[in-house]
Image (tube, rainbow, N blue to C red; front, side, top):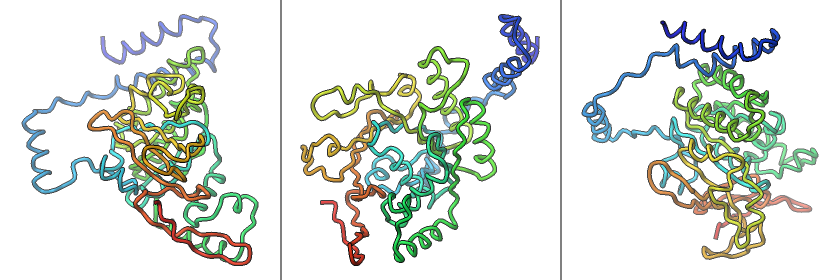
Length: 350
């Protein structure tokens, strides 16, 4: 029996479980079944000789060619420690509401777009509203001034300058949020292939769904994370996925530092991710100083898992309006809006 015939028979058996199924439901099941079993039509990758692989690695090292083709995040400590965003890897960034997950992804997308084409997939914010965050970041303007359209002449000039600075970059925003992960992946795949996307952001995974698991959220999220991981591997993507954390963080005493068990609704997220990092701001919980010093504007990116290599905490800092995130060892010019005039201030992280 051929693989194709075996696949047809498997599908017939599954559909016969419910003889009352209508045409619409039948087509839905058919599309889902084909998507899940698409590996049947693909030839397996041949095994590789270990010596040949080792020789290729040695050749790259001798030529000083980067082996991982990592895309820089723009955060010096991150890039020095982990090399950047690694193709085929899934980085899961978890955090409680208001910690700054979306803002961190926006900053990483802007930084990565200097080096490679980027696709940002927003599941809860429209493309228009998300674009305002990108503008606020590049123009260094508080987001509320944009949303209320309370801009002075200098701010309008900086917005035009910020927009022009993005003109030659390839950064796409998708705000499609249909529930099926399989249909979404097919939608994203079009842009990944046609625009040669190298970095993809998904904000955030708990908003994704798959109808066949509507009674078991753990299995549903497990399937979704596996599909995302497989998608990254097939298309050689560096994949960054935001995730909500459970309320157990807030119930905990002390510093309320997140841990792996706080990942909401599924342990499969931890298993499938190559790296798991938590965004954490001690200042948010009223901790103005800790063992590392003053916490004002400080963001910790706590790596709780790294499939290959060490796990460290990366220290970042936000501007006072939270429209930019940067390395703690980087001094930036922050725009301060005065009552009668505008001025720039050098903001020193420490």
